[in-house]
Length: 281
Image (cartoon, rainbow, N blue to C red):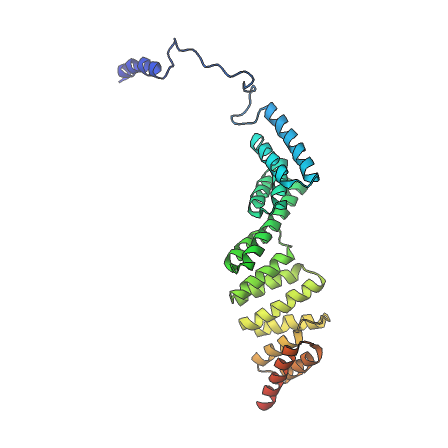
């Protein structure tokens, strides 16, 4: 066996151009690899050129030429793909151009390469661009797609109130009321002021639709106790009381709702509910 290999080896070398008479390939001038440079790593010249492109892209951004900035940032990333700054700049350029899917991917790559505050900033931008993609899907009526983008947005920024609220609305559109209540509860947990009141109101409504009237009653009572006005908290708590067969409490809540609302349709709705309660006695 070894004799056969010994006979075949010269033939293979000759066929592959590896015989003693074959000239060794010479590297092209100016392209010699640096000593101890890892395979595929950018050369010093590539790094210098990438930095020049980055600086030029920065100037383009300051001049509001985001198309030009994106083109330069793309080149910088190709020359030095391990530099997180360049991916972040590319993400920013794409974001300004409304290319939110590309921006998301660029920021994700930047976050992999950066650390500390820079990484946190990139992840915040990932969340923002996912929210923008979700908003576009939501407007088109594609609620499942919106939910997928919003889940990613919240994975990277759990304090994104707008994403929690939109997630709740998307689940409401799909009549996934328990999931909607969970999303609105997430919003209420991180929101302040009017957004908090809105989230609590929508959470209470979702819970009523989901049939979890005790929890709905508790959420809406907390909203009332906080003095929120204009969120129909009394009206929705009245429906929770009705479902819990607390007619007297429901009647009191409908009367309060009737006094507080300026919405004609709501007034008619509450008057009809009060009439139905009176007739049922």
